Length: 449
Image 1 (cartoon, rainbow, N blue to C red):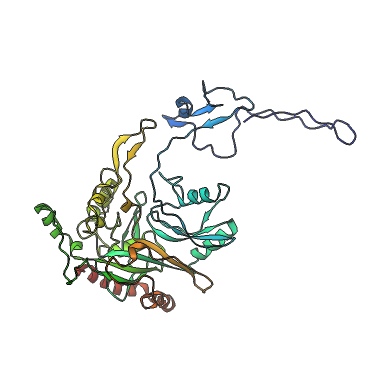
Image 2 (image 1 turned 180 degrees about the vertical axis):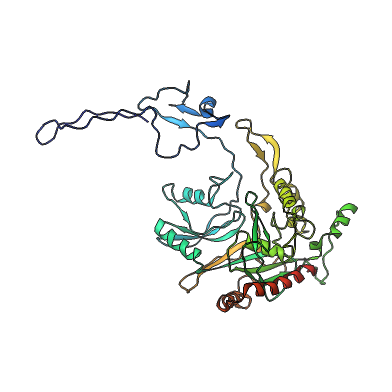
């Protein structure tokens, strides 16, 4: 950046010289107002080292800088090249549910983070939309979905619209509904879980059902149940058992193995705790079938922590979970589903043990397609007073399997929203009401199927 001092110009009307203040001397170092990211230096032993210059990543007019105290001349073009690694995401396009001059309602694909964070930068909803609509556009997300979750999201086109929508969501004047695919035969009727949720490890994003956690309430209702694939005569199709004797003995101790088939469940969160739906479904004994955290038997053991709200094994859980995606693949229960292809069990994202020759960053293997998301979809967002209602279609994994019949869209018969309204209106004693349904939940997970 160069600063130039100009001689005062003569007045155009009478030609007289105007007395202008003397120009301020240029500073020794001039920086742009924006944060110079990526930074051309790093810190080591209390010293600031100019790593980017030494590596030749900072060039002037296309040529490496000979030394760090090189004097920049007017007209010089300074370039800083960044070398970085970014995980791949799905190629599924971002769906448009609704759009006007103030906002865009999108159908977010699973596996794509909303904001640039961690190892993700350009492979994020913000940057993808910016690339599609022009980099001058600044999309403003109004609600948050986890990277692994798909569904309805609001993107403000300008700050005023984004603030208005965000305030509605924060004030709980918006009804939200999700749909999930869980293991086993989820019970019929309106199932209410009021088990408090506590954050165990912010770094790992781990939450658990804990009596000392924050209050949480979710209403569930089964949309459909699909038993294992059956032949024309109604018998379960035989599966080729490739397990060893040791693996068969191990499976006998796994309670979730007795839960056949899968269920599609409608989920209405009354509160909005982090991972609330995933934790409550795990507590009820019917976790999301491909959840790499809460349906991971290597982390939570053979019963997948069903009905567990008081164990003191958090440190062990954190230790085991921290290995997932590094030394071990994050194997959810779905890896053991007979419908999963064999290659999916082997193709999973984890550290390879190698490092990049250029930047020495630890390298990861590419994730399999089955790892890009979980079976949890934000189906609907609606204004409490009925002014607007935005819905997306059911995802493919929520549709009936080939050869089976079942619902392809929501119906009033399976709508649990009336239960939520009655809960809010009645203002029941939460502690008494919660105890009743906690006891019910404990019964659910001990019963096979």
